[in-house]
Figure 1 (cartoon, helix red, strand yellow):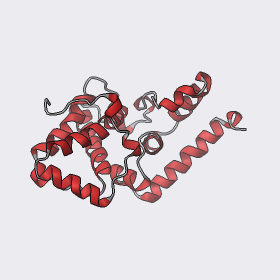
Figure 2 (cartoon, one colour):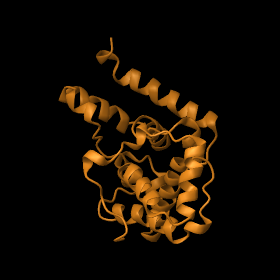
Figure 3 (cartoon, rainbow, N blue to C red):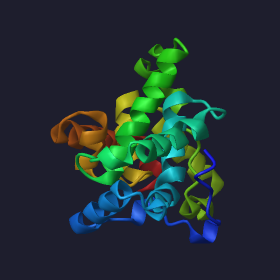
Length: 200
């Protein structure tokens, strides 16, 4: 794990704002293939925090999250010569994180956790913009999201909190684009109903 280190917060880019062009992604993959350590470190700095939040939501584990996420980058580096992600790099990393989380839960004999309603799987949000919202309103929003069925909540948070596009979510969760659209629409209907008195 010593290969990776956390860059100072001021130098870490928000992965939700990063949109690589196809050429840029191909260049990054090629640099990793060629053994350019700065390329894997760039990916680590951009995606590490977001992947940790995602895995924490799936596993409800604070102790193992960092190791699970770091292992993704270690495996990429160890197999760098053959690394050839399908789809976008972001979708690949979140798909890998999902697999890591599922394997972790299986190893803990608790895969049923992921199949339940899942209200325990969503951690409190830490979006800086949310801090300016009145505490009571913020709590109402979080409670409304908590009430969503597990899959709906997962799709919604991947889009609104983690910044994945509909196509990336479909890729990560191995579901159709139509299912993603339906789940987002379902979530928004629920939130509008739950927060009706706040948005009148």
